[in-house]
Length: 216
Image (cartoon, rainbow, N blue to C red; front, side, top):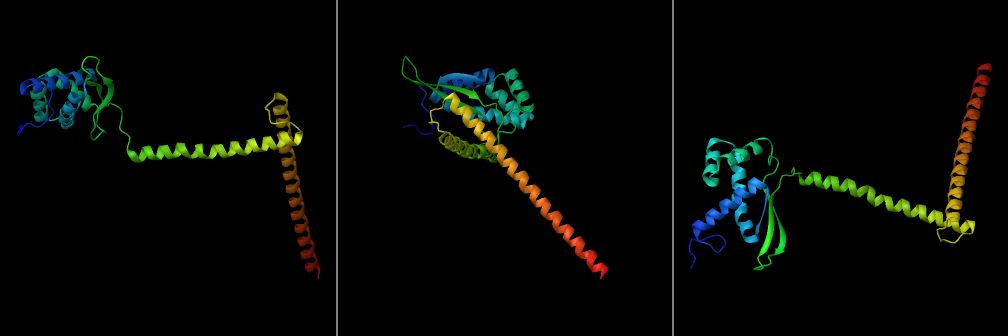
């Protein structure tokens, strides 16, 4: 019975397990990433978070706790300086990342790469807002493209071309589209001129009526 023996079975006694975990944590802080067995990586994750939490506090007591755990004053000084300069400040937790590599060739043990997460933490609301902004124009764009393709196909049929994508067909369709655009602009200009003439006539008629009223 394993009474009061919490944690994973790593195939070693208690003192060996303690030394091994300390060595893996120190190697992770020195190199920012290590390659190890999945069970060992998951076992040292709470210890890594604990050291970073001490570094975030930054007081003397936390520094002494980190030195007592890692047994390396220079490494502790380096960790505390990095955190004081802004590392992990915007991240409330989850300071490590585990990426699976597959089974080891000799004993089929699952191998992983464990590394520190140094990227800035973006809040969930900001990520969702950015994703919504990117998704909005993407949804609207295919509709315009589909309408343009339908219009070009109709023009090709009117001009007597088959929808085979030849150079002559494309040039003819482009010319027809340009001519249609010119005609539409011309019609709009004529409409604007007619409306302006009507307004001028109404203004002149009102002036004549006012003059006649003044004469009477």
